[in-house]
Length: 223
Ligand code: C5J
Image (cartoon, rainbow, N blue to C red):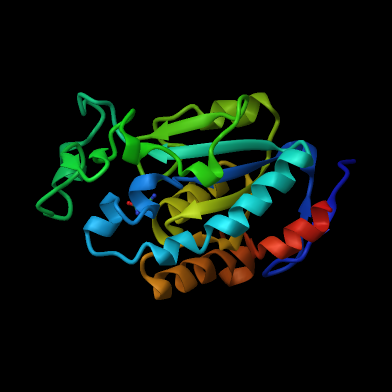
């Protein structure tokens, strides 16, 4: 039987099996979180997302110390935009969009400064970084193979935004048989009500997509 540690969560405790769990940090990229980035240029208040940085950094440190696999994702596209669906490019009808020159290089293009993960949460050697063209981290990526090769069946999920890339990824993971614990204070949205409701959608109906917990409870369990 697996050695599990109980983590307080909603709708009920999450039995964490560190050897078969991964910390998945979604899209904590400069273009979404930094004052001079794409998100800010669209008029969003990045402070709402930045509140997740310190708790995520603490969870990242504790996960590394516990020997848990850590995986990072970045939303973005190839420089020739060959993996950018025209429909995604048209979406929003913003004056400046994906692939265009933005405040921190070409927007959501791999290799550009804005596409990179914020320095506070920088990956270290051995931590897979998944570049994903969509909102979900499984679609058109090797995430599923990486998790299968390590016999991972639980995901601790942090990142932005709660209702878009976090929610999409958790739904994808749930359908693939993963137990997901989403950390409320390690996720964030430009729209506070979307954040709240996105977390409620995960825990409603007995935890229809997974569990929601707080970083303090995970840190306590890992200590
Ligand atoms: C993410 C987005 N990462 N909101 N992207 O959530 O477009």
